[in-house]
Length: 313
Image (cartoon, rainbow, N blue to C red; front, side):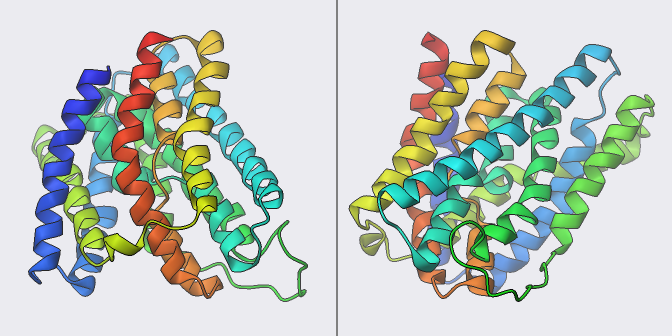
């Protein structure tokens, strides 16, 4: 698995480099990047999710999908507790603590999770990734918003902030629910429509990597290497938590797509949505951007390492 992950990450890095170059020469600016992101999240990814669930119904697949969903919930709760504990131990406070805890909990399932898992394991694993993504969308707009408001980190003022739901956060779980219903009822999409959805879904991987490359192009890479506390974050998010998930889950559920999904999605870098929430709830948007850029770059090393540990354990 290590070789497969490493080889596919090299291909993804090449796509990311194209996005980086496009960003540097002005082909992709912040406005066009947001437009491409909307195409990705509102068109390409829903199509991919629907087609990933066009599977022959089996009780084993249903069980594994629900197991993935349940384990994902537990992992997010544990990550929340770990983020709070470490923040207090190394004395991170203020709005940075909100971003720190949020990014420990929520990885980049959309821009990195789907394309990496698809590239490494093929279309079959996307059913499981879609189930895990439901948990991400639900918790990022509930627990995630609460964390960004200082939940368990600061004294509450009593004022409630409106939950800024976006179209993708509503659309993706809804499409997953529709795909799940089609799977359970064994309804098959007609071939001409299925081909159109498949072609649209195939945009996810290249589009995601180009967008990430554009984001990195707008970052000052020389300034993203921050203080020692942020490297503790990287160790916790990209290595320690995935290793714990591997150590606990493998003896219980064994090898297979469920294990690969929950371990590698835990190892994904900070979620892109962090910047959106940071701008809405904190005054640390720049810090959030640095965390995303740095964790994305470091994950290119840690993801193959986690895959290697999965192979030898």
